[in-house]
Image (cartoon, rainbow, N blue to C red; front, side, top):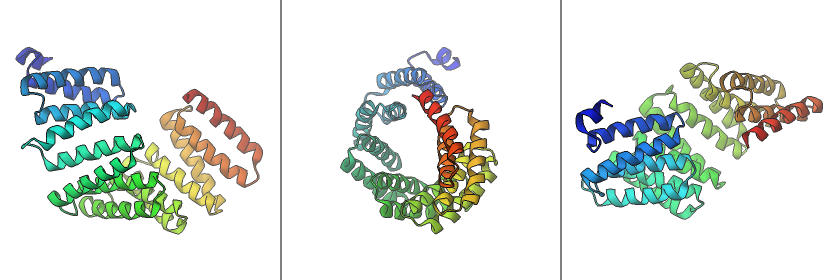
Amino acid sequence: MIREKLFGQDHPMFGQCLNNLATLYDEQGKYDEAETLYLKALTIDEKNLGPNHIDVAKDLNNLAVLYRIQARYSDAEALYQRVIAIVRQSPDANPLEVAAFLNNLALVYSKQNKLAEAESLYLKSIEIIEEVAGPENPNLAKALHNLARFHQSQGNFAEAETLALRALVIEEKTLGSNHPYLASYLSNLAGLCCAQHKFESAEPLYLRAIKIGEEAWGKKHESVAKVIHNLARLYTELGRYDDAEPLFLRSLAIDEEALGADHPDIAVDLEGLAYLLSRTNREEEAAKLEARATKIRAIER
């Protein structure tokens, strides 16, 4: 590496290079390689800056995110605890970064079923963002969205819907009405409406999410397929089978082309279509799809 030759293996600039390369490996799913580089970068920064420097906290956060992705929640929790300890005593800490770190630890607590601790941190994160950046900041929308998903996971659909709607309003105001980010927010809000049997409210949200997704990523993108699949399930629940079936077929075709015939998402598509077929007394066709889904699930394990 150029920076290694220029500065040596113990220089912070080389550590920054390692962090950047680790992030690339992380995005590619090369987690072992990413972990090795994150740890090297952490060692360099601890040696040069001391164990309580704000840049060390950022290194620890990068590594904790990697562990969270791998479901190594205990490892991630320990790192996040150290991150928060550092930023709470650092005069250089950015309050919005502190809020993000709190939110990250809340996500880990949620995964570990430490619900009271998670909710407390979500709320603290929101409080910090509102105080520092105001009630219309995009970071606030993300924090509200995460708290909404937390409530959704607990079956608190009404609370989740209120939070998700508030997040959507902020994102629309700051990003515009057709930003790609909105597709996810709209789809999640529609799902919350469905959970409360507010199907008429969910349909226009799904339709809008599909339109935004198609314009942003194209009509054959797997993210678009997921929303199409959810709309098909909605139509199935409403008994609108003629509307649902072509959507299930379209979602399946997109995912097969984008992801391959044995991807786990294909099993979800097949099960949705099979459910529709069974409700319309086409049991033989449904059984074939279920058998294929089961085979894919076995590969997944």
